[in-house]
Image (cartoon, rainbow, N blue to C red; front, side, top):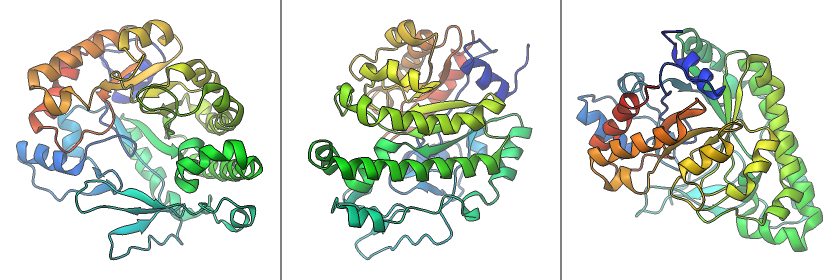
Amino acid sequence: MSQYTSRERVMTALNHKEPDRVPVDVGGFVSGICYIAYDNLKKKLGIFTETEIDNPVTGTVIVEEEILKRLRIDTRHIKSGPASDYDPQWRNDNSFVDEFGVRWRKPASSYYYDMIEHPLKDGTMPVLQNYKLPNPSDPARVEGLKEKAKQYHDKGFAVFSAVPGLFELATYIRGMADLFTDIYDNKVFLAAFLDKLLENLIETNDYFLEKTSPYVDGITIWGDLSDQRGPYLRPEIWRQIYKPREAELIKGLKRHLDKVGGKVVLHTCGSPWLLMEDIIEMGVDVLNPVQTTADNMEPFRLKEKYGDRMSFWGGVSGQTVMPFGTPAEVAAESKKIISALGPGGGYIFGNCHNIQNDVPAENILALFDSGFEFGKY
């Protein structure tokens, strides 16, 4: 095929074949561009529209179609909305409550919101039994999404969405430190909590995909399992407690995605190297954002060991070259990442997680222009 649509390009690459060039993505709800960097990019391009924040916690934006076309982005992203009875409960201290009951507050000195209250901090069975999870089948969640996804699909774009993973969301609701100590001294509560949460997530995902089928090509699970040194939990503990449940979550997604040849993407920052075989075994098709500066995550090493079974998405460091390099250095890094991860397909080019507010507009343009330039097979 000499001329690919964006969707054909993305799906060919994710099926470990080479399309006409490496597909390009800028991220959706899980990864994207923070608002100051985005406004600077728009000024650079002479665009003066109002910026719309997509995720208040991270400050990432809804990237406008004009920008997506300028950056030659092959994907489009949609996301589920909150249930109709959701109340963010904003306070004067610049805090709000998310749909799972977690309170977030933005300090005056920060660009980001931090968690300050966890609804299951108490960690007792009565509190868990009374804890109300969001309605998984509220029509408000999916209002207009099928039509939007179809429009993108008909225009030839690959359509992706994002859902929470069990482990990361559990750390929000319970609090990470308490969730970890539950492994040893609150086992009954932990099992009951995780099972209750898993059931809700599966029902929510089923409803979303039933209402947006057949126009969603893939789902990204935002489910950080690791920091830059390695997994948060010892692999044997994660395998015992979380892996079977995460596998059920993925199985539920695949019931829908397999019908359309869709893919499951796992978004985990840091170094999940010690869990890679498990991640593949669970049914994950794509790893994102590929933090190549983390331990054991060198791109050539990843491709050599897992490239026949796993696709990769992202890779250009947002910690080093993007904020601190020159445009020429960004281009050189892009070429290096593409040369490592691109051959044979199995790669979507893009930023490693969010483009932060200190990234110059020139570097953002250099990133995507070089991705296009060096992405020819």
